[in-house]
Length: 334
Image 1 (spheres, rainbow, N blue to C red):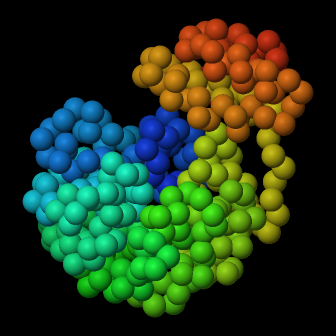
Image 2 (image 1 turned 90 degrees about the horizontal axis):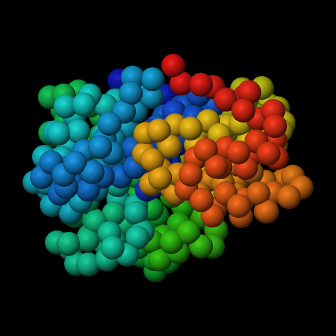
């Protein structure tokens, strides 16, 4: 898939996820074969005001390329200013979030809502996108959009969104196959993703209910999208990218990692977040624990003990008590 001048290799894309796609996790997914990485979404208003926590979200390493910075907001001025600040870091792609369903982001009127809330105000979506595209043209950075198929079941506007985003100059669009009203409940409707792909002149990426490599292959076959994006299916499961890439290239899905291998990857992830983010990072890693450490005897008890502490050394001891050989699998940082 080609987005502007950026070539995206075959495989699956790691979706941007708040409190999930930080740099340690992105790097694991990249090593496992993720074809494109995104930052967690960052608020344009905060970036424009140089708020450190927002600017930190934009940081990435050369080993993460191709790489997209994702921003969200409502005001054209703040979005263009944030895009210009992000462009100073020289990402490969600048992405606009029109898909976040969180109430604190999506609710409000035309002049206050952001994320998927702007699906109710398509003219503002188009104006924001057009302004950001113009701001990025001198930098040579393509602008993409991630969104949902509509606000609710009575106002699905995926085809209008495609038309407006193309007119505004977006060079690719990713659709999560749910409405904002669904949040993450029910099933993603891939038929609207297929319809968007059939109508679009720019690349379309499909997202939603891709929990296994076979789901990625089925989405490609059923919708014809240019690429598949994996979100929640990757939490605690970065090897899904290696498995998906192998399935797409060879037609055969490799076996799941052994419990020891999963435990070792969890320890590597823990090692990095503990050093870079301390106890806060260890707490954030909790959402990955269930998937990393599952499918073996005493798994629930092991996870329960891990959830009771934020001491990385204690957690390592707990895990290695169950899997004495796990530590030797760790890819130590240089």
